[in-house]
Length: 335
Image (cartoon, rainbow, N blue to C red; front, side, top):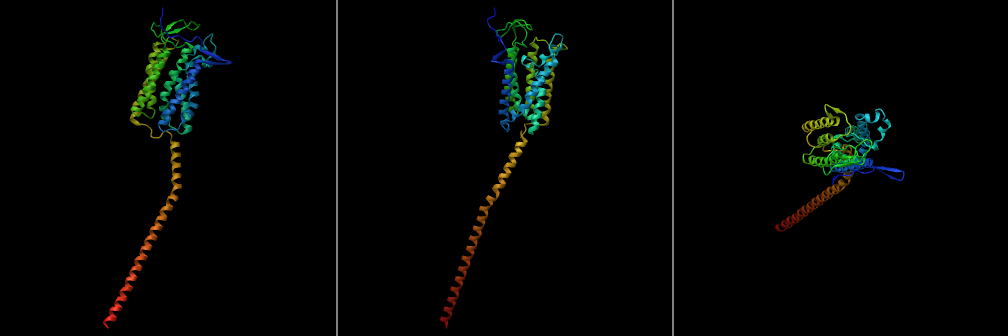
């Protein structure tokens, strides 16, 4: 008898009248909001404008969802296009199935479009949003718990995950890989925030560090999973993807640190230019007003000097007259 385990939800959807509220979709949406919230705080701290992260996310999120679904469908095509399967199910994203690799790839394309429209360097934006993406991934993994999917090998550990019987699964206790990855993602987010501040990582290196750190944990959790997947040289496809992408991220960190050390001084060039222009206009308006007191002071000084010269001249003339009078008196006395 198993005394401790993690139960799975009996249902993955709650109906609010005619509107279905699916646990998987709710977790994805909650993760997006968390990523934008954290990314906005980091962007403002770097000198950016509040709301910029959300504006760019309007482009990045739809692209990311499309990319994540596309990667999943391509790498697990047999689930939708093999004999007896319905290809329409490929569009039912609420049933689960998002590949993080495709989500990051196409999400980056969407972010690039948004950054181009705002005149913002993509690497700076990626650095700001990186911990938020890790947080969003962790929250999104709870969607797998609602759908009872992507669990690991059978286990008798106290934190084993209870899976109920269904056409595509066998009842039993398994490794809760969703929980492992959730905890790892939270740790990655905290680590990336600390490392970014400690080493002043910029120019996309913070984002690359997130990718490398995530790949380490993903390699392990992927090894535990027992869901159907393609294998290459005895390893699951996603294990190879994690190894290659993680290695590329490390290479980028090393090369970028040598070519462009430190962080970007300005993350929103257009905003900085607009503020500089506004400041110049303010100084120009204040210039003539400041000049008036100076002119007035110059006039007062000139007037004071003129008055002083007049007084000095008058005193000299008075002294000369007195001297002449004295000379006249002396002359009269001598006569």
